[in-house]
Image (cartoon, rainbow, N blue to C red; front, side, top):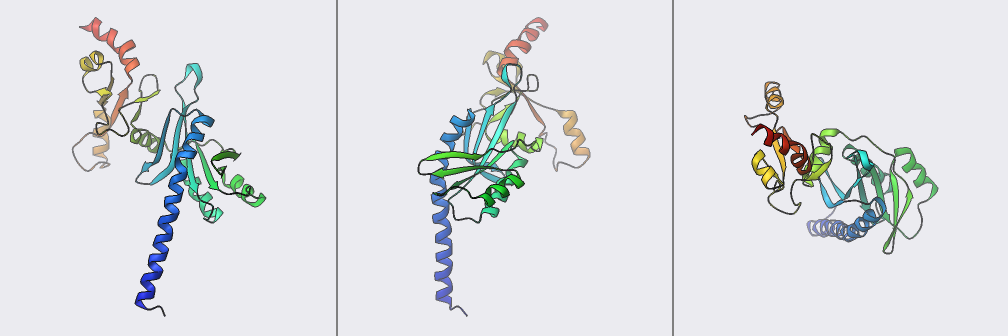
Length: 244
């Protein structure tokens, strides 16, 4: 039996240890983010970002579509300090595939991953990154996944990115840290053209359909769509001038 004072001390030790572990892990995030920028040529990086379903330690997005496509790849990394049981950490990393195209476990360790750990990672389908000192080394590449589209699009918006309905490229809706999350788009065509911004509009037919199916609980429209500034300037602006 544990006395009340001993129970408090034990709880304080456990909570304090967990907070220390989290603090140490957070110090590794910028190191991993810098490595991801070089390795994957990420144009957008985020730390401790996600949705209500879970937050990703380090997240990067890179262009992979070449000259004829706006396709992007989302890379999610779970960062550990070397003390979490490997299978637990690997399983947590794998869960990120609902948002991301590639998933990695980055672990702080002096010794390399052993054969069993590499076998487990290969079987689960995650990539491995060894953090040693101030350097990251990719030990095992991640397979490519097809994330759940609506969750990935929500994740993009959480990073203040939107997908253009015309060219399908991602573009900046606003600044991630700013309060005005839609500062780079307008609801008005004329203002979008004049301000060289993107356009946001609401798909009312889909909104009505979702309301009929009781997929929304109020009378507001949430089904927003975006058109990037380039498509507004190059396609919509000439059409608007001809109609006017």
